[in-house]
Image (cartoon, rainbow, N blue to C red; front, side, top):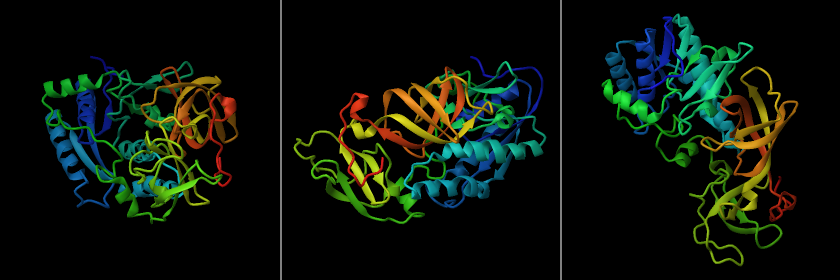
Length: 393
């Protein structure tokens, strides 16, 4: 059973203890290696402190119990103001603009490896650690590298791709060389009180609550037409949406058009969100998981961030346009503050606001935010229904 970092030199390491089993095992491993370990519980959200969906209090209790078992100090720190300013405000702005952001990516770059790192350094830490499934290494030029975890089903390098050298060089990921099953087994063996605790899912400040209900507290509903590309040149109205901010590309559930048929079909196959026309306040939907409107081979990416501090030299790499996606071979070209990815095979529902992350084998190179995806055209080898004139590409 291995870990991604090891060594005999004792260091003062501040680890983020979330109350979950991953960070708990990571802290135990560091303590076993002889380090001076301090736990830090981060509170990043407080708008719903009394809400049934908020697990902060339970998580703090679990983190405290873990610290007692391991034998380390625990400090609770409130970063909710920083989170609201650096992460949540951007989250709302993106949804209002019709995009679908990934707040976990921004949280890592701005809170867990910035506000948290700064606080840890004030506590005298040489390094910080988290329970992320990822690994670090050093390249031939002495720069820190971010590598995928051994357990690729749990790899979280995608969410860490915005880290820079100053952040990554001080980071430790003790679970990077372990599989999740090993982590659970070890937690049971050493008697951690949260060994069987369910993994948290979803966005931290939303929890298990209905997403649309949460978003509606901050963004107003603005109804408009739902159209399909069949029928007239401008499509056919088949319903009314509640506001474009509340939908994402590739979405199947919650569209509200159950029973509607496409022109000339027998009604088989589900409907999917394919386009959001902000200017016309129109939601476009198509029938079929692999409809050409949902597929693209060319994706424009903005706000590039490179872990090495500069763009990669290779032009043939692989990329993910969403978490848990299999790496897709592609060619990439840089154009000032943007880059374009051209994939060998069509990618489904590449969504503006989400991250496109580049890899060279196991090495995560960095990435950016998807700005747009060009739908398949006949020249791409797939016959696609032309977009209506009012719908921007």
